[in-house]
Image (cartoon, rainbow, N blue to C red; front, side):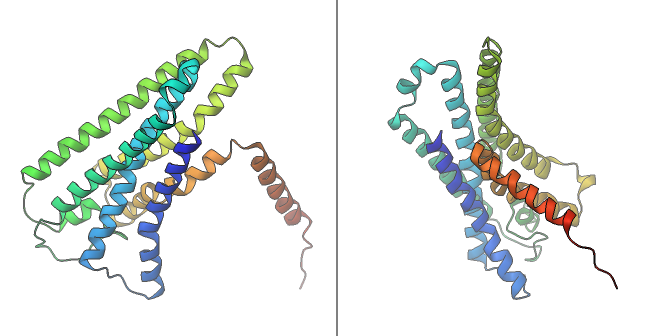
Length: 262
């Protein structure tokens, strides 16, 4: 689990550092420009991190399934070599998918200007600048994307169906609580990642507006990578105790702060 969490942390950092530095630089220098090559690189690396993270979350669901449903076979099914192979497959899938998508997207001629209504190079915004209809490559990539997303989602759902069935058969409440505490952080991360991405790309056109699109893009591009470490770290009792003490200290200072008078 910690090996997969290490990979997930690298992908989260990659997602944030792909978008945030350029956005902050443009804000500081009061500009909104990005080079064509820089846009393609940003598009590639963000798509690479997002796709690899989704595949890795699928692998982590299988890891939780084996740990809870087949604990005696965990060392055999998920040894160090198997973990490395599955993590490498997730990274390779993200690289291949982002390479194909970036090559196809930036091969389209842009006839409708070069202004993106977004704070980073997002796929739908780039495609809006091209008046050419979807070619065979684009249709093939859409089908491949749908298949990849569906297969990963079905694997995650099936894993958790088996996990919940196994947990509910545990006779002791302590054992059930321990199993649920192991799975809930991962389930929360998956739900946040999938729900924000689905809402961003499948929301009705009637709901589309510049401000809403910006908020939704922030939700699915920056919030999940930033929140993931917090969700997983809350399993650490020492960290939770420190956070509670910090919050209690801040609250007591606010209450006891002497009121000022004119």
